Length: 588
Image 1: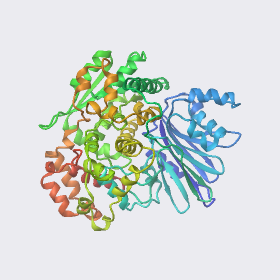
Image 2: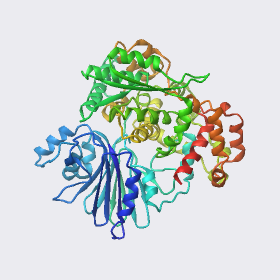
Image 3: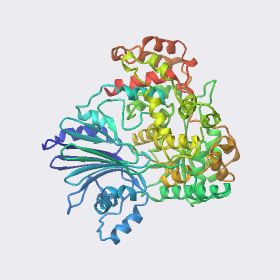
Image 4: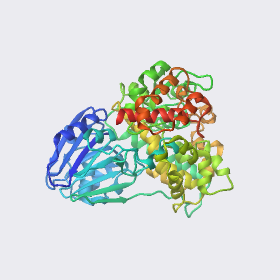
C-alpha cells in the first residue's frame, strides 16, 4: 500500500526531476516509510512506501529488473502472491525478495499485459519496459490511478493532487462530470474527473502508453450477473457464499507482516468480519469504533451494537467519541485528503477514526461493499417493486439526488446540457449478461458506483494516515459468485438475506435484526448552528461567486431552509454545494 507517480515524455527530452519531487511530496502521507525514484530516458518513476509485506529493502520501489530494464511502481496488495511466486520460480524465474512487488514484475516479464489476469488483490501499478508504459488497475477499482496528458507527455499518480502539483493541468470544470457529481451523490465514473485535464483509469482496465503518445485501453475483466446452469438450493448458496467469504477474510489476514485490525461499526458487515476472523483462529484481535454527538433526529454512535460483538469475541476494543466541535475543527483536514469531492457524511468520520487506528496498527479490514454486492440498501426493494417504466426510470426514481431539471436550476446555464447522467446509467443498465433488473442494478453498483463513493472514500481517509484498508466483501471471486446468485436471496429479510443467514449464531441477533444503519455523522445531515454558518460562509465567499458554478436563487433556497432539502437517499443538498466549492477552493 503506497503512493505512486511518474511521467513519460513524448518529445524525447529527459523529465524534470523537480516535477517528480512535487508529486511525491503530495503522496507522502500515503507512504510514510520510504521514498524511491528511477529515471530511464524519457521516463521517471516515483514511489512512496507503506511497508506491509517484506519490510526489508529488497522490496523497495521502484523495482528494476537488471536484465530487461523493466521498472515497476506499485500500490496495493496481491493476496495470491505466494502461489504466483512458486509458479514463477517453477517457470525459471529467480526471485530475490519475499514480497508481492517482485511477483508483479516477474508476472509481467512472463505473461506481458495478461499478467493482470493472474493477480488476485487490489492494485494500481505502472511498468516501464523501455518501449511502453503499462498502467493497470484492479478489477473493482479499490486502488486509485489518475493521469493527465500534457502537450509533451503523460503523467500518472495515485491522486489528482499530485498531478496538480506537477503543473500544466487544465482545471476547467468538466460539464459532464459536474452533472454526474450532483446526480449520483459525488460519483464521477471513470474516465472523467471534475477537472477537464485529469482522467482516471477505469476498474478492470489497463492502459498502454507508447513513446510517441498513442494510448490504448484494454478492459480485462467484466462482471456477469447470470444464474449458473446448475440450480442451487438456498442452503447450497448460503454455504458457497460462506466459504468464499471465509477465504476472502483469510487471505486478508494472512498476507501481511504487520498486525491487522477491524473497523467495527456496529453493523452486520463488520461484525461478521470479526466473527469470521475468530473462526480463523486469529488471536489478540483489535477492533476500532468511532461515534459522534447525537442530534434530535438521529443517534450519533452505534456503540450499543459494536460493544457486544467486541465482548463476544474478546477483542481488544478501542472506542472513540468525537464531539461536534472537533468535527467542525477537523473537517478542513478531511476535505484536504479527498482526492475528489465526496458528499458522504462519513468521510470525516473515517478520517478521524483512521487517525486513531493508525496509532495502533497499519492494516485494517473493513466491511465496505457488502451492501452493494448483497443488496443491503433500502432503495433496492423499492426499485424492484416498480412495475412500470424503463430500467432507467425505475433506478432514477429511488436513487438520483436530483433530476435533470433540478440540476439546471442548481448549475449555471453554461453547464446545463443534455441529461448526461441519465444517458450513462441507461447504457450501463442495458449491458448484456444480467438476468434481471436487480442484477443489472447491483452489477452497476458493484463495478462502477461503489468505486467512486465508499471505496474511494475509505482509501483516501485511511491512507491519509498511512493505514491500509482491506475489503473482503470486494474479493473479486466472492463478487462473481454473489452476482450469479438469485436476487431474492439478497433482497429478502430487508436486504443481505444470505449474510444474515451466515451470521445467525455467530454474532448477536440484535445486530442481525436491527434496522439497516449508516455511519452516523448527523451534524452534516441535519445542518444547523455552526455547521450552517460554515457552509454559508463558503457559499457566500467571493471565490464561490467568481467561480459562477451555482445559480444564486438555488443556493439561497437551500440556505434559508437547509433541513427541508434532502436527497432521495437522505443526504443534505446544502452540504453537497458547500463541499464541492470548498474542495475546489483547496484544489484550484
